[in-house]
Length: 264
Image (tube, rainbow, N blue to C red):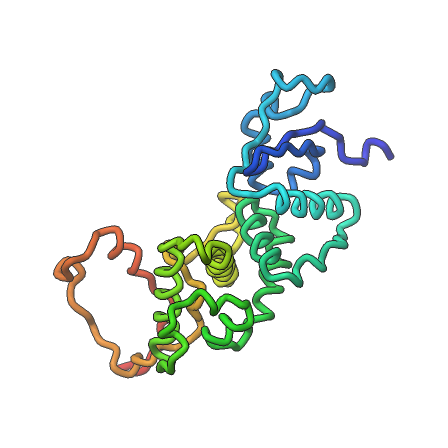
């Protein structure tokens, strides 16, 4: 029976954004594919020796994850490894914590936690307009005032994202906390949208997105049919469009869906 049990490898140290160290069993850390790859890359360097001598190992640096958030992710890994259950689902009821868990599990590639947290946010915004999403997630207060006016459905999405990004980029100290929340919300929504076209690649042995992933897709509905499909026609040659950066052109050439209107 002992031979059937997973073999314990040892402990690894993880260092949060603030420099707080977490020493956890490697078996639990390996539920994160990001950490799994790091451990495999240099196991002798990352394993904590029995005597705990800090000169004999290197913590894995996680500069983008705060200690408060990392502790929740590690608690999930601990409980999931032990019993495939998690009693921390209540954390998903708080919007900012939900954003943090989505971004952290996406970065660390803790797939089950990512699926759970993304599905929670997706359920909240399902079938809602961009303005309704902003209201549901309590982030409309930092958007530009003009977004409170009536807009056509065609431009509402673009205006909301553009205005939000402009406000975020200004980084006004008086609304610093709100700006951080808005930025997290946009990033988390972007991750949720991308989950819709993410699949496991057996060659790379990791999840891979099969569509463009350069621009923020927070308010982009990949299933919405273009209003202009009826007048679809060949556009100008890309090299004749000016000014246009080559990398932007390559990124925009992305066929998401084609509907055959007429066949001759």
